[in-house]
Length: 282
Image 1 (cartoon, rainbow, N blue to C red):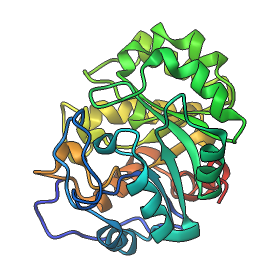
Image 2 (tube, rainbow, N blue to C red):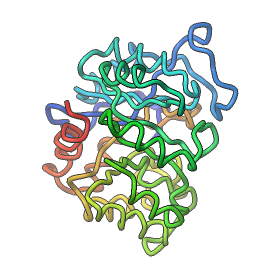
Image 3 (cartoon, rainbow, N blue to C red):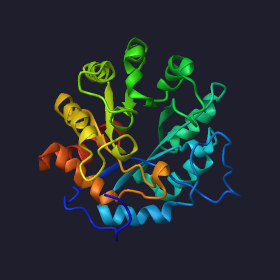
């Protein structure tokens, strides 16, 4: 399930309103300087290239996520959202000294989330999470969290106390294979029980040891999450796959993988369209 063959369309027909809930946009380095903390090579993959993915998969709406490549410089993100127009929402990275006026400006442009990337390349530490969540909550933003899921149980109480909504990236992003009785996975299920936590079923290729076509080790975790809270599951391509630029997965195969995990057309359509419509306010 890699991009080494000619890209195909998904076997599953995407419903109207299908949303890719996590992708990145990159631009020319002379216009958007790369942060020295970025862990991955930075491609020149802009909106024009992504529109071809949208057309092939039947994607109508999109959430542009600030990549680690640009740290807290959100110019590329905001420019991409402006180019995409009303079909786009954004997840940004801002520092504690950001002004209310800037937060309002970004909100007016469609930003609705603050990214906490607690892996190499992230710029906001966990210690800032509670205060920053409180700061952006008044603007209607949620927290988008990416961390090693094996440590979730260490932070459950803090995460439960956050105001508003928490979105967890990449099926929990368990960096090593785990069983479903792992404390980190049980913590994620516990967070789902709060009713305020959502999970993106995305990027299985980043953590799977079993690999394509079905990524069965990640898949069993995904299926458990779907069963626990189908109304708060999301799908995302993670285009252009910054951690796998040399051998990227085919996005159509990733969409079909979601259908394989759900084993149900109506539920797949709900995750692709209805759920993101509710969360991101399209």
